[in-house]
Amino acid sequence: MAINKSIKEKEYSPLSLYYLKHKDNGKFWNCLQEQIRMQYLPIKELKKIQWEKFKKLIDHAYQNVPFYKELFDKADIKPNDIKRKSDIQKIPIVTKEDLRKAFREGKCIAKNITNSRWVYEKTSGSTNEPFEFYKDKNEEMLENCCLLRQKLITGYGLGESSLLMRGLEPKKPIKQKILGLLFKKRHFLCLFNIDEKRIPGYIHLIKDKKIKLIECFPSGLKEIAIYIKREGIDIKVNSVISCGEKLSIKDKKVIEEAFNTKVFENYSAAEVMELAFGCELRNGLHIDNSRYLLELIKNNKPAKKGEEGEVIVTNLNNYVMPFIRYKLGDKAAFAKKKCSCGRGFPLIKELKGRIIENFKTPDGRILNYHFFSTVLDNEHENILKYQIARSKNNQILINIVPNATFSDTIKNRIYEEISEHVGSSMKIKICLVSEIPKGNTGKHIMMKPEVA
Image (cartoon, rainbow, N blue to C red; front, side):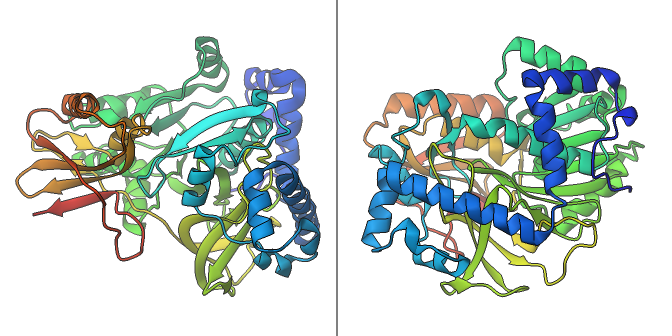
């Protein structure tokens, strides 16, 4: 696969090029070209850019965000005390619970930024504890350009058909959806509706629309891949981008064999989108250190190359609600060798995040974790934590730690939404509990494949 350091315009659809060049009065096109160029800068230059952005961010946070002012003062440090990279260790690591509490108290939003730049988000992440936060509107274009950069790396051509497979279709104005289909030929399939009766229709869509690229949660695409291999169906897509979940080696092989393709991994979380990505050589994941400062910490010290550590990340572009030395909840190791693709972005290997398993009902429905999380996250104001489990007698158990606003009305609403999707072949039981025990890793287990 050839490695492109810039967009070769003659290779792509003129209509798509026209759309991108004129999007946001040309700002998107210029941003995209800059992000393609950025990844090939020498590591020394990238580190300089990263450090300057980090210093600017902590100055801003200390002056304008009450949570970070209190955090720094309690640790008896000032932004000027952070003079070199080793000084970063003086700044306390921040957890999701820290920011959740600060969000409720109104202390984590920058006082000097108007709400026109606030982009509200909520996620349960890997803990099943609903988390609300704000992104910076000024960061949205940059994120979208980096996502398109990842697609181009896989060999995707502007104007080729692509398919997004996820829980719910992103909310966009109808005009934007039409433009997306006309200029980007981007299609959508909901993972919530996967079952063996629908899979032939999904395969037909992939063939009929000549899909070249699939972006997906791998747990959903794996089920389609298993069906394809079992039925001996001949199908090919050029590339697959796996995101949102850790991809097991076994599932990666199944998907690649079924679709005659290559799978590229993308490491993102709602708070830190496009954090790292796989390049053409697929030797690991390149950290975008022009947009993030990623640390790996073991025993409260920086992990050595090849040594596994906890992922601590700083988002260098979110000024609305800064994430500084934020504990993401995953583990990884820095690669010992530099990638030979020519990018200055460093590599991480052996990323250890969550691997999602699906439930299959007796009548052939495939219950994806992301369906349950979407239904329950919609009640984030009433739920503190939750866990999904399957009992041996074909019963779905939903354990919920409620807060003071939870009521029978909310419980019934959850039951009805989930029942409609699960069907009649499995019973549903919602249990209100005071606590959900953590697993051996210290993280909450999202889905238990089988309990007594």
